[in-house]
Length: 286
Image (cartoon, rainbow, N blue to C red; front, side, top):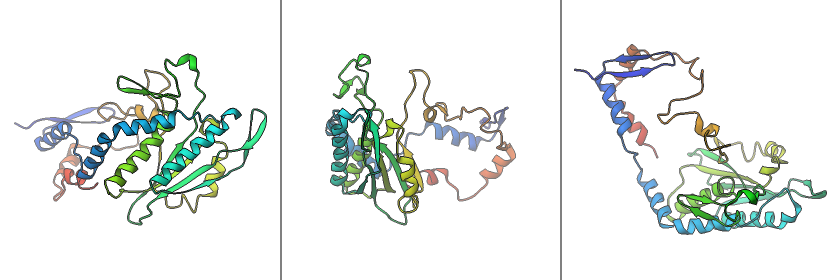
């Protein structure tokens, strides 16, 4: 007897009796994550160097890179130098750009520089641009259980100013590039970075700067990654995490309204396509 399965629309659930499709879907859901050999090497390097990575993050966290008060200007400059040190260490080409002035505490001072960095430029690979920032909000110490400028671990969580927003993502990118370098592996994409220090100052000067670099720096960019998101509270996730449920069903009302429903006849037609192996497509590329 054929094993029934379901396909869903936003209005209904229809059962069919195709055992092949049902078996494939059951196998897909139960399958363990397939890890490519390259990724396995990277994960092993990360595991072996976890303690050092945590120390590196702690070094970044202790820098009080607050751009909303003039007394922290030297700390902001120190954080810029910290990022430059890592870019040099990883042999990433970069350039710092001065983009003008701003007023803070009634004084006119230079805006922190914007850093543009590039790693690889192969025409056979896609180019990913990563947005990062070095500045942090001034912490309200009355709401902290620990020193915000000292990295603290409690159970499986790390606490420190910038860990979740800014410095944590920054060090994650530096560490994964280090892993590829040390394992003598080629990155699967070209990377470009735009790193600012006025994220918490409405990204002052950033928009005009990006427009000025549209052709020469951003012209070849295929994708943009922003590692900057957080929950407003403890119950509801931010948008990028909250658009799907645990089964990857999209939760946005009306999202599928303009999409035609797949019918059982169409499913049957797709299953008769020859020389098509979903696993080969899914796992055949790095």
